[in-house]
Image (tube, rainbow, N blue to C red; front, side, top):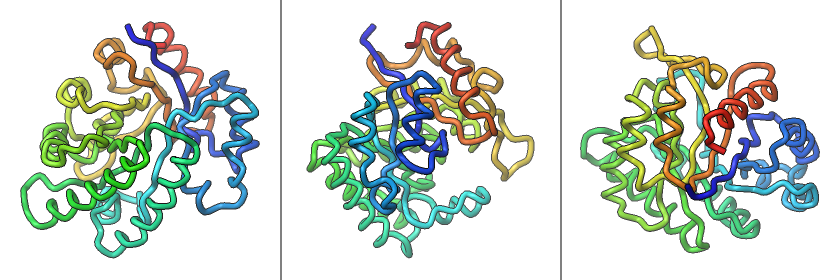
Length: 270
């Protein structure tokens, strides 16, 4: 098996600045992160992030781009506001993406991930517009030798494959998150991962339980307590793909991250 690295999503640790981020990674005993890049671009407290992480021996595996105006207060709101779908926020998202691409290039990152937005199942003007915007982003990051990976979950694996095939872009792939498939009720994570395997650039380690209420999210839970069948899932992860623990719910994030690490090690995943 090819080697893979284990990291943490910086936003899971809810740090106020890079000093807190370093301290939290040390508490977790993990020396790699996926770094939210918008704060580095827009918040002066994060201006020396790369230097502080480097001095502490923390490796930045990848970056994350948050598009402008995302509203996660409900499924309906994020469907309208997420990713590159809304026309109103696209110009601002494009300007932000250019800044993030510059920072990612300066940091020599190989990968940036993002939510593309709810990709329509049917062909049509909206889907064509989104594909054009995603291709534009792929060109932007690809020009600096950076891969761009779309988060799974807001559409089925089959729809995402169709979009990826239509894009046919050498710099575009997938950041696979099994919990998102469950949270958005978009299919079996293992089946989706097998469908998308050739495009997978990175894996998020996160767990969830499916919703019992139509039109609402499922619930994120600590890894090993949800609906992801981890032994089967991890055995299907492509060789050499990095694993990044993401925890966006719960109050004891560090304990939950350590629980995820224990499960991964028990399954020989890292």
